[in-house]
Image (cartoon, rainbow, N blue to C red; front, top):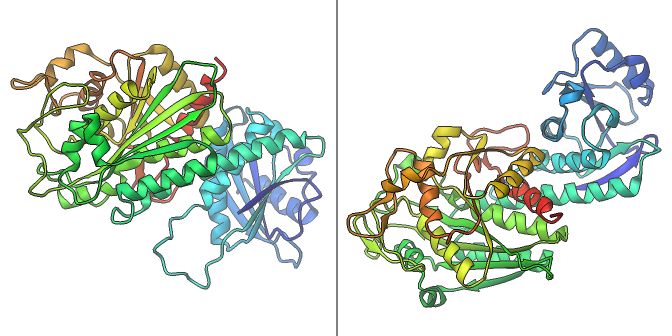
Length: 499
C-alpha cells in the first residue's frame, strides 16, 4: 500500500473513502470547517442527533449519493481528548481501515485533528501509518484468489497547511516501517510449520539482514555440537528437521562496549515431545516461535532506523518432536554452561533452548545485558490473559525502561517477582536442577530457570505465551499471530540509545 501525506485541499480526487477521527465534544461550528459541504452537513446531523458522539471505539459510516469522491465516509471515535493516546489512535484507525475494506475501498484519506490529541503531530502520523498497515493486514498466502476481492492500494493522511511536512514525513517513514515489521513477525508466526521450518526461519533472517543492514550467521548442528549446546541438542534430536542457531548482529554504536543480547525462542513446532500435548493444544503450536519472530521484527526496526545501540540477537531454532531419538522424561542432559538438568517434562523445552542461547550470547558474543522473549508458559496466559505480557527481571533500571517502552508502544507488561524462595522448586535429586517446577508459580519459576544461566548480568524475561497469538480478531489484528514484542523491543532500544 502507498501511504503518503497530503495537505487539506490538496488530497487526490481519487480517494473514494474518507476516514474522519473525532474526539468527544467536538464543536460543529468551528471544527468541521475543513470538510466539504455534503460531508459537513451529514456529520453535523449525526453529531447533533447523537447517532455519532466520538465515543471511544465508535464507528459510523455512510455513503453519499454523488459522483465525485469521496463517496464513503467513516467516522471513528477517539473518546476523551485527554485520553486519546497512541494506542487509542491505533485501535481506532485500524478499525476504520477494516471498515473501508468491507466497503471495498481502493483509496482512502484520513482526516486529522491534531489539536485534540495528547501526542505530537509526528507521533500521530507514525501511529496512523502503522495503524493503516495493521488494519489492512490479512494472512492470505494459502487462500485462492477471489476476483471480487479489492485491496486498499493508497492512503492519504491529511494534515494542515501550516504543519512541518519534513517532520511529519519522518514520522510517516517510522510508522510505516514499524507496521511492516510487526507484519513480518505475524507472517513468520502464521506460516504453517511444514513451511516455517528452522531452515526457513534462518533463510528469512538472512533475507531481512541483507535488506535492513545487520549481519546474520547461521550455525548448523556440527557447530552447535562444537559449542557444547547439549540442552539445545537434546530438544532438537527428536525431529527430522535440521536445527539452526541464528545469530543476528547490529552494531549501531561502535564506540560503546555495551552489547545487548536479545534471545528469542525459536520452536517452529512443539508437539510437547513425550509429554505430548492434546490435539487441541497442538493446533496452534506453529506459534511457538513467536519470540524469534518478535526478535527478527525488532532487529528490522532497530537497523532500519539506525539506532545508536549494539544488539546481538540469538535464536536457537528447532522442533520438539517424538521419535526413537527424542529426549524423554527422566533423562539427565548437559548444557553449554556445564550445568546438568533433570528433564521431568519434555514440554518444558523452550527454556532448554533458551539457556544455551543465553550462554552462547555471553560466552561467544560478549553481551553485557540480556533480554529474552518467548512463548514460554501456559501459566502466563492463566495469570494475565492474552492482553498483558508477563515479565521477570533482575535489573530495576532495565525493567523501568521496558515499562516506559510499554506505555509508548501500547503493549502492556506486568512484572512478576523474581522470588528467590521459589528457586528451591527447581532443585533436583539427581542433577543441578530440573527443567520444570510444576504448577505453582509456573511463569516465575520458568524465568528463574533461565536466570540461573545469565551469570548475574542485568536481565529481563518477557513471556509472550498469551499475547503472541489471538484466537479472535481484534481492532488491529485478525486471528493468528499478533506480532507482540516488536514495538515493545523497538521502543526499549529507542530509549536506550539516548542514555
